[in-house]
Structure formats: C-alpha cells, structure tokens
Image (cartoon, rainbow, N blue to C red; front, side):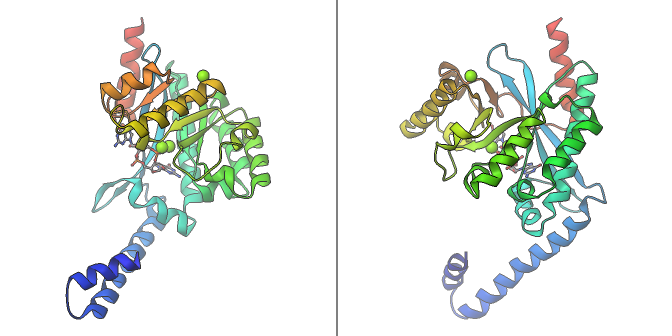
Length: 288
Ligand code: C2E
Ligand code: MG
Ligand code: MG
Ligand code: MG
C-alpha cells in the first residue's frame, strides 16, 4: 500500500515526500473518523440487515436467504460492508456487531417460520468472531431465545477458519454442528487452503466464489474450476451454492453441472425485509 501511495506521490511531481505523508495522514484520519462513528452505530440503530434469496435450482423456489449487513450512515446513506467490515474486524467491534447480526437474523428467521414461509437463514461469521471464546455459547443462547429451529440457521465460514490452529477449530466446528445448525464455506476456492480439510470437518455446503462464476461459460479456466467444485460437492455430498449468478448463460452452465442453489442478481439483489416478505408471500401464493 505504501508503495502505491509513493508511486502516486511521484506521479504528482515535486514535493514528493510532503505529499506522501499528508496523503497517508488523510487516509488514517478518515479511518479514525469512521471507526469512531462505528463505535456508536449499534447504539444508534444504524445497522440494517438485507437478505438475498437463494433459489433452489430444482423447483425454482426461495428456500434460503443470506443476511448481508448494511450501515445506514447519517450523512453518507447506505454503506456496503466492503467499506466497513475490515474496520469492525480490526477494532474488535465485529464481536458485538456480529452478535447483533446473528440475533436479528434468528429472530427474523423465526418470524418467517411463524408466518408459514420458512427459509433457512445464512449468516456470515468473521474470523475474529469465530475465534472469540464465547461464540458457541452465544449461538446456543440466540437459538434458544429466538426459538428458531437450528436447522434453519446456516453459518458461513471462510477457508481460513479451517486452516489455522487446526485442532481448536475442529472442536469449535463440531460444537457448532452439535447445536443442529449447518456450516457453509463461503467463497470456496478463493483461499489458500488444501482440500484435505473437507474430509475432517463437518461441512454441509460449498459456496462457489463469485469470481469463478463471473466469466462462465467463456473463460476456460473458470469453467474448469466451477465444474471441479460442483463435481467435488456431488461426490462428497455437499450442498452447492453458486454466488454472483447474473445471467442465463451462467445459470445454464451451473444447472447442467447440477448446482443445487443459485444466489445472484439474475434472481434478486439483497432486499430489505419488507421487500423480501413480498417475494416470499408471492411464491407462497403461486404455490397454492
Ligand atoms: P459474501 O458473504 O461473499 O456475500 C456475497 C456478496 O456478493 C454480497 O455483497 C452480495 O451483495 C454480492 N452479490 C450477490 N449477488 C451478486 C451478483 O449477482 N453480482 C455481484 N457482482 N455481486 C453479488 P455485500 O453485501 O457487499 O457483502 C460483501 C461481503 O461483506 C460479504 O461477502 C461478506 O464477506 C461481508 N459481510 C456482509 N455482511 C456481513 C456480516 O453480517 N458479517 C460479516 N462478518 N461479514 C459480512
Ligand atoms: Mg457470505
Ligand atoms: Mg461469498
Ligand atoms: Mg448434493
């Protein structure tokens, strides 16, 4: 990063050093301001959850949704997680915020269940949250308090959680599984991990990273990787979800290779809860 800043500084001509340092100050200052805002965002009810449908390839119904965090900033409007998740991680704020996400998702999941439109709710866990010693107890407590049937909760993990300090993590995954929830690996194939862990860990779902879906079916390498992941999922009996499905060609390619679920703009972008309710009620009506 410093190299990039230095490069820009040089590009902009004389007075390099001064420019370089003031640019760095500005970035650091921006982050500090943002972090201070984030510290109060939970108390001020500035976080909102959006939900993106996952469509069963067979039957075409919405059977699950992924919870995606948004920050309703007083001046900047709706902010996407790419702009603040890393700050939440670095500051440790992700632990309370992540707990709020889990709790709100489970309460919402229970409301859908009560309304006769049960959908599984998939919630992203960050590394810091996963490593937090209270995680398993928190999930257990939230399930009990919300009354969400555990099979309607899926936790989305990243490959790194399976890779470092292996033994502690197996225990944690086993404890989470024992609560009755399912475990997904998010952005599968994008991390630096071996495949061996798939044998040893209680994983249910592989979510194919959207970078492999983006250029289907034209890019040979991406096609090969997507096919291999779907083959692996079938052979090892994992549920497969393709993320970032934006067009019919991608969907056809994935369907032909027996992908189980689609998630992407072709079907729906992430929606606020009232819009998702309309969608769920619509699919219930069609069903009758
Ligand atoms: P992710 O978990 O891999 O979520 C999928 C991202 O892809 C979402 O971005 C979603 O809006 C986007 N997406 C879905 N369909 C399409 C599509 O067809 N095309 C394209 N181009 N994008 C699509 P979003 O909501 O900006 O979230 C980004 C990342 O932030 C998530 O990636 C996840 O890693 C993280 N995140 C979001 N909410 C939470 C949360 O509550 N907790 C934690 N720890 N991380 C979260
Ligand atoms: Mg995810
Ligand atoms: Mg993903
Ligand atoms: Mg299968």
